[in-house]
Length: 350
Ligand SMILES: Nc1ncnc2c1ncn2[C@@H]1O[C@H](COP(=O)(O)OP(=O)(O)O)[C@@H](O)[C@H]1O
Ligand SMILES: [Mg+2]
Image (tube, rainbow, N blue to C red; front, side, top):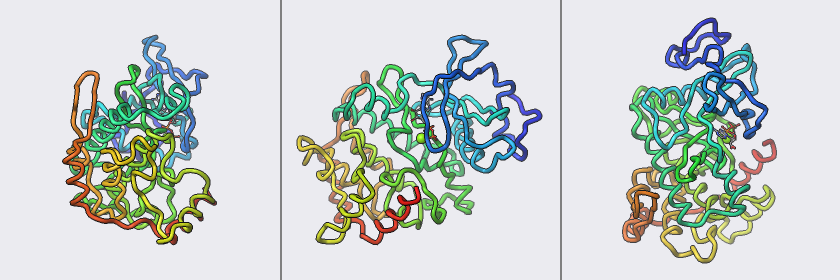
């Protein structure tokens, strides 16, 4: 990897060290792996090493128009890689800047957790499988929120099954899609780490159904906003959809329909009958706390999980600890209709 005659100017050396000159032998194939809000993902093969495969995300911007979007997605990947990476985060291989902007990550043939549910399982994951992935997603978040060097800590801001890749043996997960990730130290305009960073007015961070209340009202985004999305992702694994995810119309009607004028976020409301009043519903109650200051950080979530078996990994929830956490957090209110009016307007222009 070397930096020379890049069509993109002004990228700092900690980024350009990951530039793949002559694509480093990687050649694009016509195998289309996925499509998201930011680009098309294609399978790449390496002409130097025939079994070496990568996933290349083609950004919808040309190199000479390269704006901060490209830098914003690369910066967290480079920071994670420089810090030695994490077993729960998809390895970043480098970037290509000519003739297109492409971000290369290690290829996972099972693609995302969503692809697995939709195409292989054709339904939600059973609780045991969901908890195993949940634990690893939380470990990945712990790395981003706490383990990275203080000024390099990152918020993911777009956690959902579509952005979590599955290992080839289906035993482990890798967080992916850092297109909306946010560096706490740099972007919060503060030298010291702040738990809350201002979110841009009108910015669509992630999919609305996974967004924390404080993100929806465009006030602030902190590490605990990722915890809300983590809870939505657990619901998505167990039911195939995040809470209240149907149509925008139903979304707002539901908000209006409740007597208290509040849309309730309680585990039991989203879970199938056999999982209601279980440790899983208590765990969801602990994370669906409207006030981000009361919502637990990821290490508190991890504290209530227990490793029942290492290999293959089996994870349980400690009944006493999760109930203790719920008692500590106390009562919490739902989400007001005013907030949903705001979401509704956003959905209309989404
Ligand atoms: N490394 C990879 N290996 C296999 N499939 C991938 C990989 N990266 C992305 N994909 C597929 O492409 C989809 C979109 O990728 P993502 O990085 O989320 O792009 P976007 O920013 O456009 O949402 C994923 O949901 C997944 O299906
Ligand atoms: Mg995505």
